Length: 126
Image 1 (tube, rainbow, N blue to C red):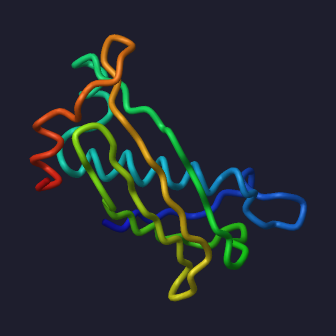
Image 2 (image 1 turned 60 degrees about the horizontal axis):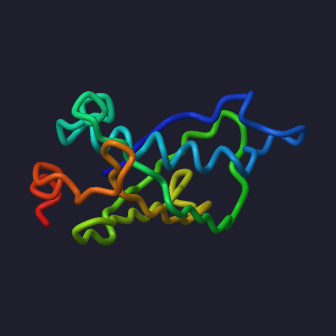
Image 3 (image 1 turned 45 degrees about the horizontal axis):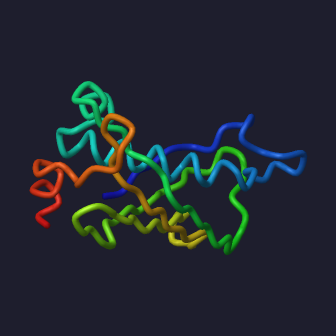
């Protein structure tokens, strides 16, 4: 899936470059839109008592992203087993790769690690 949006001024530093912390926001927005597009938004999972927990996050910055550029975040499920799943991200402006990243997650219910819900596994065809 590709998630698109424009960089806002408040996301930039004094040089007009998107601040490094905002790349992780892009990843989170893309994950949220991916789940929404599959019919299981975070809000539905939370109503069912699940929390999606971030365990690891990494980003490799290739080139800066500037104010008012439209970014495209390509998100892909990399792996999923009974308890853990990971996404990879490619952040581009036009055809220029600006960053790559990865996140690892798990599900928690009632404060305890739980297996990934069957409906989530089915939606990802795992």
